[in-house]
Length: 91
Image 1 (spheres, rainbow, N blue to C red):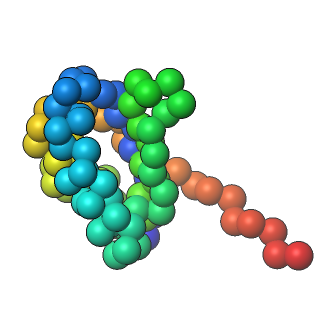
Image 2 (image 1 turned 30 degrees about the vertical axis):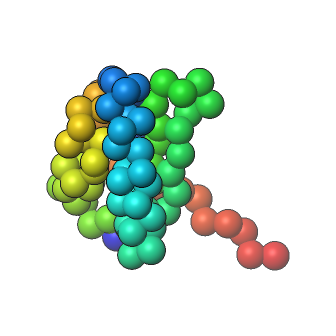
């Protein structure tokens, strides 16, 4: 598995509000399965970042496609970047 960062901007705040509960349920289910490592909105409320543990970029695109925010056109500018986190030192 690999880690990916998914960053996106909010495109429609009304659509975001309408889809928020479904979006959070979706992310919680993905977190329970180990796909989402962590996620949250940016401090300026312009968008969000999601850390994913998936096989490849295609799997990230599947996550995007299944997201209620995507289906509601609440987000735009999805940026996908593979990430190599440094393991925590054991001490």
